[in-house]
Image (cartoon, rainbow, N blue to C red; front, side, top):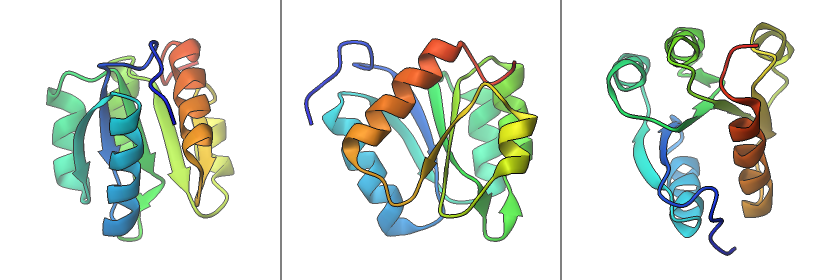
Length: 128
């Protein structure tokens, strides 16, 4: 995977509770020359980062330890940070609640990640 000029240098929050998945996502983002914030695997830390960090994009696992990431998504939407939900199962309720977001079904390939990030940037944020 080659760097994308549009993504280069962007600060991307990674919220993922599966260690190996988080490491794979981090590696893919670094190949795109993104600056990774995290990965973060719990809701409290993710919410703090969503509220306080300077962010250009966010990749959110749909749930962390069985809890939905809606509070984190709400904080990001309030700041107009584009969101990509990453999940291994259907998330219709999240997609309908946040229609401007992108969704990546796990497992995904680097090209899928790049396309989702570019769509999220084009959408202009997590709110519709």
